[in-house]
Amino acid sequence: MEKFPMTVTGYQKLEEELRRLKHEERPAVIAAISEARGHGDLSENAEYHAAKERQGWIEGQIRELEDRFNRAQVIDVGKLSGKSVVFGATVTLIDEETEQKKKVQIVGEFESDVKLGRISIASPLARAMIGKTKGDTVEVSAPGGARSYEIAKVEFV
Image 1 (tube, rainbow, N blue to C red):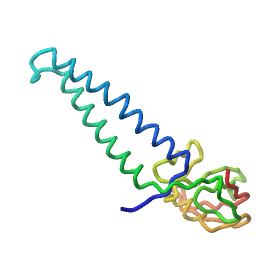
Image 2: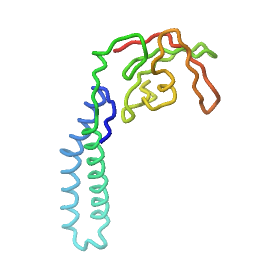
Image 3: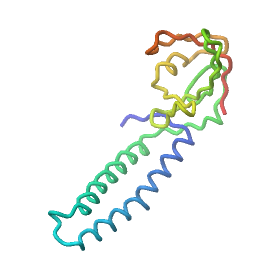
Image 4: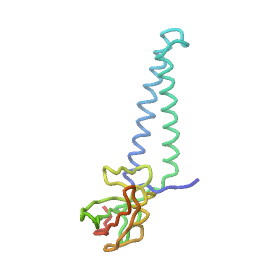
């Protein structure tokens, strides 16, 4: 069973989503199925079929999240330190073409959210930054062409 890295925050969100599915969504869909059964002929009961389909989706989500939960290797970023970029690091980058600064944190695959500046450890940018330090330049192939960034700051928050 392959483990994958995850921050404490990502693990807590995963735990909360799993709790919500098991203790709120699952009972609600069971109640909806029970109610729909009371409406008579199941072969032509759209509410029943929709509820059963929703139940299948919820159970699939629960299995997937439990698998992630069991394979997660939780890393407390607050306990990390150093000068080089590793999993969990928050890196301030300067685009060498536009001089724009952007801040990204390297997180696990399942907790990445580009809008929040959380990029997957498997992303090309994260892979290019791993092992680099402040002042280093990283080059990344992007859909619009190659981009170069200077690492302005490496921190563990």
